[in-house]
Every structure is written in structure tokens, then in C-alpha cells.
Image 1 (cartoon, rainbow, N blue to C red):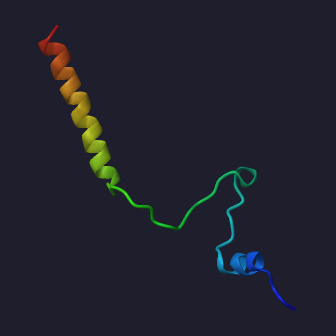
Image 2: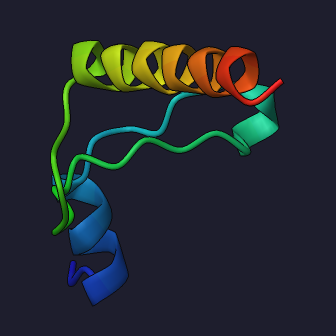
Image 3: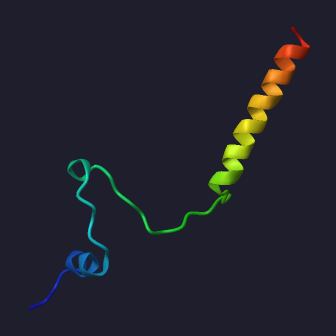
Length: 60
């Protein structure tokens, strides 16, 4: 019994999650790019809000 390339590939992959009728898919591969933690993103957002408020009050 010979398996095709597609069937061999399926055996080595993790099973897909059953969410939203199969529309949601998670990838385990890492992609190239900047890696930032959620804490940094929150701090940047708070900083942007603070700068915006200071600029609004200063140039009113």
C-alpha cells in the first residue's frame, strides 16, 4: 500500500482545530520580522495617547 505525497504530509502535520467551520487556522511556523511582546505594544499605545493629549492641550 503506497501513500501519495499529500497523504504522507497529512500524517506529519498537527490536526486542524474545529472552529468556525474550519475557517480558523493556526500556523506553527515562525515568520521573519520584528518580534514585540504585548507589554511593549500596550506601552507604545499608552505613550501615543499621552503625546496626543499633550499636543491637544498645548495647541488648543
